[in-house]
Amino acid sequence: MDVFDLIMEAHHEQVVFCHDEKTGLKSIIAIHDTTLGPALGGTRMWPYRTSLEALIDVLRLSEGMTYKAAVAGLDLGGGKAVIIGDAKKDKTPDLLRSHGRFVDTLGGRYITAEDVGIGVEDMEYVYEETRHVTGIRSSPRGSGDPSPVTAYGVYHGIRASCKRKLGSDDLAGVRVAVQGAGHVGYYLCADLASEGAEITITDIDKERVRRVVDDFGATPVEPERIYDVECEVFAPCALGAIINDNTLRRLKCSVVAGGANNQLQEDRHGDALDARGILYAPDYVINAGGLINVYGEIVGYGIDIAKERAAGIYETLLSIYRIAEEEGIPTYRAADQLAQQRIREARAAKERAGRETDAVGAERG
Ligand code: NAD
Image (cartoon, rainbow, N blue to C red):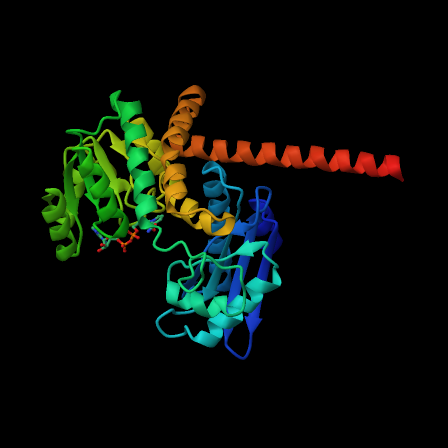
């Protein structure tokens, strides 16, 4: 497999392979597209079996970030970094500092954050070497836990999806089955309960389930039973790839709308939801509240504005549902189209501005 073929396939701008013999760092930073702004995306640490596997992952993840930022209306591009290694064994302060130095060489074209295998405490070491980091506790601009904003966006996304599918965005009496009572799941249940939704909750952590039952009067079910719950909305807020061959045939809902990342195991499962008449709120659209919150660190707004912008996910989803209907395509494809359209328009505007500057320069010259 040719490396440049891979890079060119999804039109990545830049891929940086980083190596530090002293700390054992092997990382890859991928910048997918900076048309809208600097490429933002977390650093993931994972024991990839081969460098090729790591490269494919970072290319896929960074492209996803471009789309997520574009649809959320943020002036950000898409990037991501992966460190090859086992976060439990290989992660050291020196390794993280070394990664930070490589991030710094990009001069802000890439801004990093935490991701799988890398926590907020790890980012403090990266921050010692570069300012191009978000989600730092010790930074005065640090935006803190993004989960309440993510959940707030998901809540508005559920309202929009109910409006589209059920004809009303009033959630009173609407049955919502929530998978995962963690950070996002808990806050989402709070928002849903305040509107009178009927919540069914599951988690593998019984204590977390109990908290949601006690605080919001939710009905608990065993983790495996959540797919069989009759409801209007299934809200995945735990795992990826939960829309798959096994779960699809069991779902008894009208809408799938939740905060989890990468909900479709494969694209064809998005097609299958569509074919079954289940409305799917594309994951990266409905869970963009966290990114909207982090963006506040870069441009300088606080949680109130972040929440206001996250509420905009309502209108964004309605636009996506309209595109899906007009074009006769599943909603996850319509979301990609909306992102591509925004990037195309921004690129064309930049090119126009560039031509005008050239013309002025030529006249003066
Ligand atoms: P979290 O770890 O706080 O919560 C996840 C919960 O899922 C945990 O309570 C865990 O016990 C539970 N869980 C794990 N396996 C399960 C299973 N088989 N059945 C039922 N429950 C199970 O994580 P979080 O921050 O709430 O994130 C949840 C999802 O949302 C993840 O996919 C994450 O990538 C995505 N997401 C989160 C944010 C954010 O702001 N936190 C932003 C965007 C996307």
